[in-house]
Image (cartoon, rainbow, N blue to C red; front, side, top):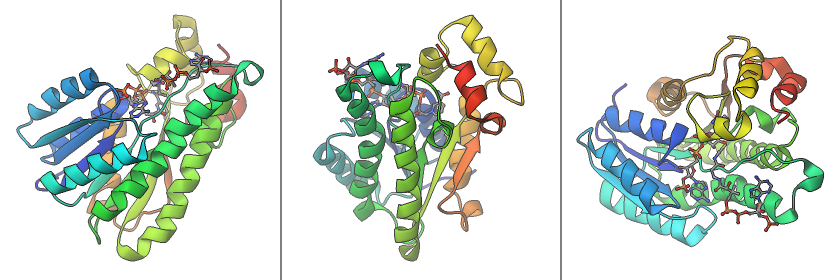
Length: 260
Ligand code: COA
Ligand code: NAP
């Protein structure tokens, strides 16, 4: 896929799945900006992305801080040009039973995933190419399948999906498409290190996926590049599971596989 002269901004894009997406955009010729909290993650990501030869910017900021997110987007657009592809993927998750979860722990995850996604989309809006920009929010099957010990992430990602659909409605008329990707269990990620931390848990999780394997970061990145491309020009307001059929297995199978 060719993204030469296009601009991609990836919030939470310094590690894991989101870095894989940033890397795929850079490899396809895009000018890329990434944002996350930790300066060392930003520095490492920027250096790796520069290997593709294009322009790269990195911002150390927290998606919960609307002003910092706005400033980063303004600077990215001023330096690189109007944003063609916006990915919002910053998130936090861990296993914790609802009755043991503190209000602040619940709020923390909702603030990062849901408020953070709103902050990223709202702050980006002035700088998105109109018409032509595409937004992808990274969600999870937990958004529609209740999963034990993840009441915080389930609630947060359900909200993210409604932000996706609502912004698709509001922004369609000016030529901005807004979609979501719901990855299944993806290999070599912090998410899976947290949700399936032992070999036994990994085995149970794989057994609950119809295609009987973890997905790869590259498989999510390819879906993101397709959703942001003209090939997906008539696709908006969609949450695309890229999960080997995991969500078809349902809430019970997901909960059994992630019961800690
Ligand atoms: N179980 C239960 N509660 C937890 C927890 C856990 N494993 N980890 C953190 N918390 C609680 C804290 O105790 C605190 O609540 P309290 O004030 O009532 O004690 C609250 O969550 C906030 O924790 P804090 O460490 O201050 O939050 P943070 O903003 O620094 O970090 C997290 C956010 C907790 C989500 C952290 O895990 C993180 O940065 N995650 C990003 C990476 C990630 O999760 N990747 C996977 C994506 S799927
Ligand atoms: P990850 O590597 O931990 O990615 C999260 C990224 O977000 C990191 O780069 C982190 O960098 C950044 N981040 C976290 N909190 C932030 C904040 N408050 N402000 C700004 N940036 C923040 O985890 P991952 O497993 O690849 O997950 C990536 C996305 O995929 C998430 O949205 C997750 O919910 C989703 N997902 C993952 C899986 C899976 O199998 N892993 C499955 C379904 C959905 P800093 O620490 O530097 O901030």
